Image (cartoon, rainbow, N blue to C red; front, side, top):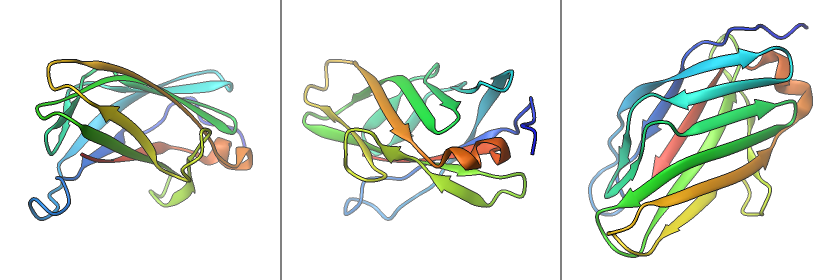
Length: 146
């Protein structure tokens, strides 16, 4: 199957901190631009919030056959927080076709430690998925928790 050059909008869903308040979701779009068959870039066009944490607009998820590269800036209004992220890949019907696994271990979870509320932290994360699923990917869904 040939990969489509345009991707649908991806959804970013943020969850509130577990144990503080019941999980609440907020859906927001992430724009996608594909550059030929080799990559597809998803860009956060606004800030995203989960509990005390914020991921700033401009965060990027770049997909290539079998791999994902994430770059973003995150912060928290509280000391010693953790931003937790999971990335799922969806097909044209919106069905999850793959979950991205963390190259550094930890299964399908990516975690960034945020020790000081006064600072913003650059976050670079790398993952992988079944490259046979690449051509069918139409969107991503990112689950966040703080």
